[in-house]
Length: 121
Image (cartoon, rainbow, N blue to C red; front, side, top):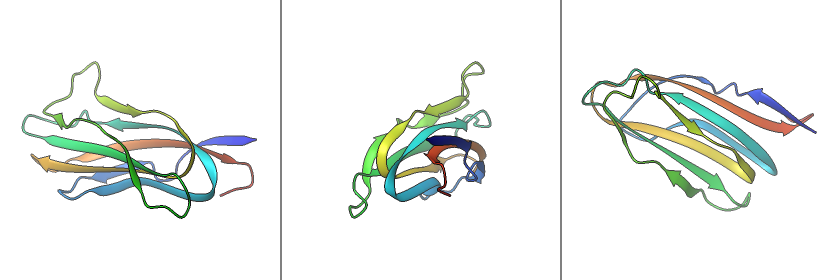
């Protein structure tokens, strides 16, 4: 049985020019990363933010790229200011990292949800 929870890694993250890990989980047993909501509504003209996700396919392997979205540039549309990252299941590790390559460094709210077997931290 799985328990879906808001991750304790959900928080505001101040962007940097280097890749910054905003969510990471590694486990010796496969688990489910449920979703992420990254609020880019604070972006303005001249800002550029990049988001990527990586995964571990085996607990002894290195991180591999899962997806890197095209850069988010300028103010986000009022009716769609967030980025959604969907579920990733049956992996031994999952990581989301972000960086801001142009503009005033912003503080971005990131919400993460994951499901773990009952009894696991």
